[in-house]
Length: 476
Image 1 (cartoon, rainbow, N blue to C red):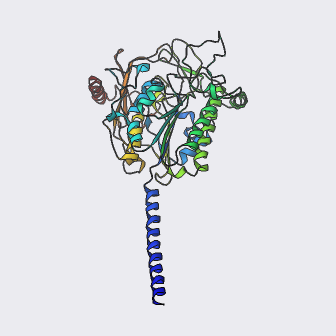
Image 2 (cartoon, rainbow, N blue to C red):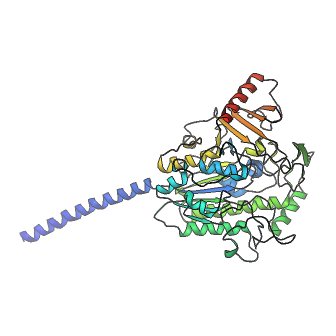
Image 3 (cartoon, one colour):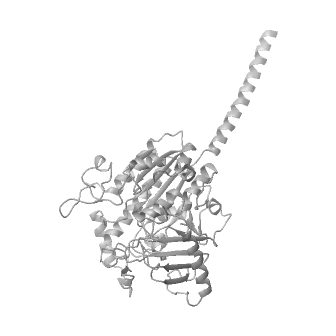
């Protein structure tokens, strides 16, 4: 009997110990969940103007999915691209630095080879245990440069800056002699069929990657739409719907074009093909956001939404088919006026960043990856861009920051702009057309349309800002 009681006692002790161990394991698991690194989904749209979203004032383009994302995000309404065209803007975003190489801004000539590790955010995020993937417009070299930069997986990314066609087959010219000087987009034709539309194919492949990823590791996936860049091609049913809506819209006394630089600025959002492209882009953003919900990873996924610069609203000596207007912002793609560089920027992390709109903090695209690195590793690199995580947590406002732009590769034939540089310090922005000896000064907070030049009314401030701008340029 005593032996039997001893065995019972030992059994009870064992149960207690197992219970304690079980409790510890549960606590450890909860801690692991709390410490789990967030997934990252970056959605970057090509040529999307600030006012091309209905949440930012468009009365023509319907963007309900992006509007909903904005309502759940920290909306940074004082955000800028680092350049008003594709390649330098993307270089700045990827490297966290001003788009300067070899003493200049070489426009389409940027290379991503040999970016040192102390300036390579993707490699550092990858080292922190992330799966890294890139989809869509790269325009900074070939597929090998993506891998060298730290992206393990890529799809439809390489030299191409825009599609030959958005309609299958995507790499075949649909007019003229059937040949194109454009670089083909890899991967896409092989996985597509008659009737497919490029945006849909791209989104399906992003979704497939997210579904089949290694679930034991966080992912960072960047989806860089080729849309809404030219060529302006859309699904016929969407074009017809927008034709009808635009036909019935009252633009009042708004002119269709005004003169700007060597050409024109478009003043109406009345292009049915472009409207259809914006709305299809929004539908595909909606698919991605719904997938995060369906996979139950929405709460642990940071979503960053942005554009690389303003919308295509300007031509130059050569007239062209213009896509949109950035009005009430001035001018557009190619220009250092607000229409060329002001961009939408939303950051969502459900349960971590309280949804709100920040109208004050001055941020630029070169701040995006420093912020993501800060979130994932608490590290910082040796770059001009800096983490705006304190802004996301509503602990800081960056209203007095100073930022710069330099556009030495102007395109007076295609977008009407001439060589210029700019500085924004606090509320004031100065643009200097340095070869023409012309300077304009604006209070951006009071005059976002840049219609009232203050350079003669405030000559001391204008001279001070011009000196600061030239001192910055002297460094490179």
